[in-house]
Image (cartoon, rainbow, N blue to C red):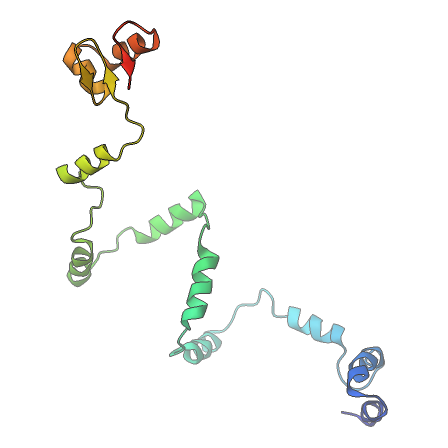
Length: 177
């Protein structure tokens, strides 16, 4: 700090010092102006780093543990991000020819066991889905009452659309319950 800056600092309180120094810095004081600092920071934009610099940066980052809070923030920031078709193709191309080791396949197998990944649902699951289907309507026909349009159509040996038309036309004996 030069003598002019020191004198200025002593003559003002701390709060007003920061306001006054901004005006004072426009003059040539021996230190670099804010504009010069900004220009020098932009000077490295687009420059390639040397292998040695990359190695040093890599060494400094090794062993760094990201906190759970930061992980959550990163997770939230990445959610909902859509990847373009071009990027998906590039990712796909990068995976072609890669082989997964037997150990990794075993881990994936163990992880996916007991999970229903695109497989046919069990009869028990299908029964639960049927029971909870709110959109299914019971149908009344002259033969009797059926829990679904499909079952009524099977009993009448006709298509489901035929039963639906009979109900919509209000034919006697056909209705939804």
